[in-house]
Image (cartoon, rainbow, N blue to C red; front, side, top):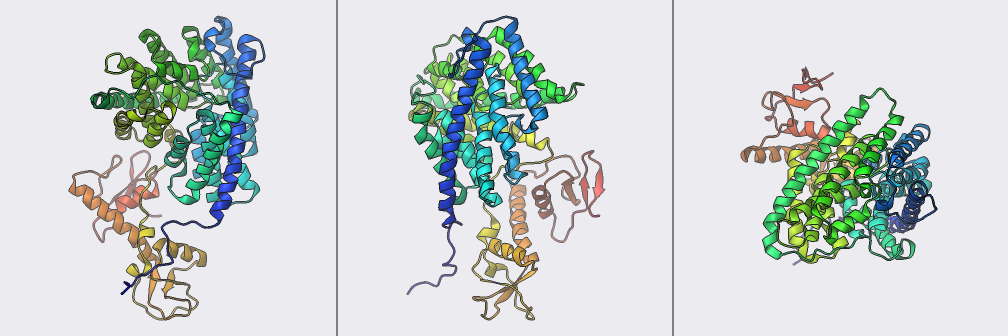
Length: 576
């Protein structure tokens, strides 16, 4: 006898034929993003050739051959001045890392990015990097590819969620075109940009990455960007040192993030208008170039040198010191740059230096250091591990990579409230929650929380008892109703009623059970100063609703929150 089942019409995922349309559009965006990546790299080569060597060139130059002297100090400053003028009289959205601006567009701007950004961002980045800015091309192309995806979505009048998918598809395709790491780009999209793991977004982004990696040999050239010569490592004996290296890299990530935003605060206190700050940062970059000219520009040759292991320790230490200094100052000044390539260089230098005292080849430890610093600073551990595998092909290094990245990730999660990316967004008044958790509204059925049917409600919309509570919420919003009738069919008998209070109680019960378990383990729930949850303290007035809801659920049953703390930590009563 077949067991009775309910909800056969439900599926594991929310996906329909429109997914194929989005995938096709994402494929087109993959083409556009790859061409944009080529244009950006060629523009960087053109600017570099003209300002450093006095001739037209389309390939990235060897900055070790750049002439030293006053010109080396002046060129980055002039490039910063040009970027400042473009930001002042074009659009200030070309300033910054690239990835935080993409996150902000997704969370706040309904995934709308203007045409000005798509045009001016690569030009400004080419000028900044070509004149010596210590950034890679991948940060700017993330923003440029995202802008192309957003513009295409706006052209076809797609919804906000569909615009987000195509924006992220363009960003991931751009990273794939630069680094030839399609899986890592897909994971970056999931861990940093999408804030979800759903077929409706995952499949189109994957299509864009596949198109980009398929076109890359024809558009960007078939040569490998980096050369790895570190082998698979010494085996299990490397696990403990790898974990220790990851802990050190996590500490370095915390220090770099803290120092970056202290420097940004320092620029904010200058009496000069912000359009002049990139020029001041350029002066520091030029002075650093006098000490180590190879630290200027994209630095991909430095990454290859570190992964090959054939660099003297003194040279690596110089790169680590100079690159970190000029990168932090330039980025804090508000020029157009990025974070991925600099983090790879700094992490690789750290690992290379440690490798001089550890078993195995220096290139192996440089690879671990790159992945650890990248995963810890961006809070994207899966992306960092797969990125290291894709650029090295060293699958035997996977256990050591897991140890190193896991150590760094743990340190940064415990040591920093926000990552190097989300801190910039928080400073603009928006807090980003990066945790992906199961949706209690999708796990609970309407029939589990409905109440007994009372008096008939005229023209009340109906919902099936096996429907998910999240579907019922959407039905309430569409009908602007506070009550839904539960029935097997629209004309069927009423089985019960579903109220808004019952829907909200689902999430509250989940939060309360989580807090009970945490108190049982002896963990706290506070996130700042205050009197605690026992006396009805709800949180700070600049907390997001999820944090306040969490504290409210931790109160004893029947108690209501009574107070919040303002930004000045003064306690104020809840309510109008």
